[in-house]
Amino acid sequence: MPQPGPHAADARCSICADGEAFGAPLAFAFQPIVDLGSRTVFAHEALVRGPAGEPAATVLAQVDDRNRYAFDQRCRRDAIAAAARLGLSERLSINFMPNAIYRASACIQATLRAAGACGFPLERIMFEITETERVNDVAHLVEIVTEYKRLGFLTALDDFGAGYSGLNLLAAFEPDIVKLDMELTRALDARPRSRTIVQSLQRLCEELGITVIAEGVETPGERDALLDCGITLMQGWLFARPAFDALAQPQAEAWGA
Image (cartoon, rainbow, N blue to C red; front, side, top):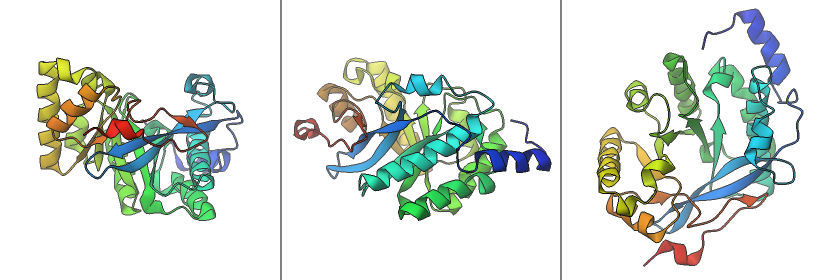
């Protein structure tokens, strides 16, 4: 993404610093990411919803190039405020748009202010970079991740295996976490070729010092196949569906034997 000049940067800062330029109402649902190794909740992902729990698409349909920056800032601020209000004690995972950030050190300031105002610890915030959004400037993404790590945030590459860049992004920078797309985990127990791919990705990430989370886990068979591949962090309806304006807790029977 071409970077704007200083005058454009100043204007954009004044427009979206607090997210007010995105005026549509929004709220969040929270879904847990579980650690089967310790049988604990690793994090809760904040998923944008309409003010009465409407699907994310109803909000995202109102995002365009004119308000993308403000929308990204608004989501961060409101997700942190909601997590603090709900008493979240685990990590908070927030999706962000890399193409909605023009300078990492400047655009993160509203997030720092929001966390400070709510008393939410920075080390408990994880940012998920969605791989399904085309990243035109990989060097810019590396700058963002480097700055976030410097500030103590965890970084995760979301929807891995479903997007544009794939392994090229792992070669360019090292996120703390990779989230395998649900198309890789779906019916994994019945798809030997997919199982081989997932096992190979797990080994690769382990060698790179990257933690793997499997998304979209819906059946005990998928859970057990992922465990056999060495993956213990999982997210999906087997454990809990997203809870609107609440912190969903994993179902006891979902942990398995």
